[in-house]
Amino acid sequence: MTAASTISRRSLFILGASATLVASAPKVWAQAAAPAAPTGPFSLPKRAYEANALEPHIDATTMDIHYKRHHAAYVAALNGAAKDNGVIAKATVDKLLGELNQLPENLRTLVRNNGGGHANHTMFWEVMGPGTGGAPGGEVAAAITRDLGGFDKFKADFEAAGLKVFGSGWVFVTVDEAGTLALLPQPNQDSPIMAGHKVLFGNDVWEHAYYLKYQNRRADYLKAWWNVVNWPKVEERYAAAKAGKLTI
Image (tube, rainbow, N blue to C red):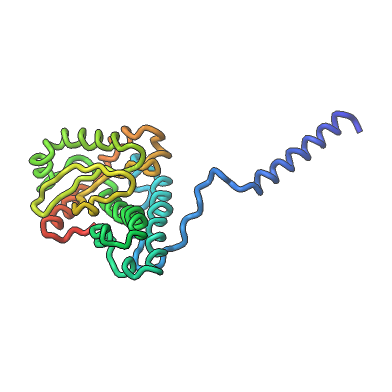
């Protein structure tokens, strides 16, 4: 056997062994497995559109991970806590958040994080949709002009507030029963419901909401988001808030 053929056979052996190792090695770069289907009083809301429906502004992979993993994890955590705590099992998420300081101290952080995450995301999926975007109309447009300085100024202020959130968080527009609007950024999964406010709509500025497509360009994500805001749905939420019927 020649030296060349020995080297060739040795190279093939090394390549084959390497391929086997790669195939059997855990994919540490992959997303963690999705939480098991949550069971209990809380459930993942059904989206009114498919994961790819908001492209190119929000990509399908981000939507799937965001909905099936992140939001599902908040729901699963709430249901896990509900098994051992009747106070959680018997209450709606908006009631839990609105009365957070009345909960036993050992439950407050869990409800704040996971209840807030569940409420925030339930609203988030609802106020987006395919073939939407643009500018609002009707009473919402009038309220934005009256309370927030007009749509162009409001958009600039909303994006600036989103950029100023340090780390992870949200930027919300709140509404009261008189129909008055206010801009309210919040850290982490804190919900305005905890401070007695109702949420008209808001945008998620956690990195998991945009990083696969926009990387660190949060400003680009905030600008692109206006293309998927479902203003007719926001108008419905506005009417519900004025009627005292808006929950999450």
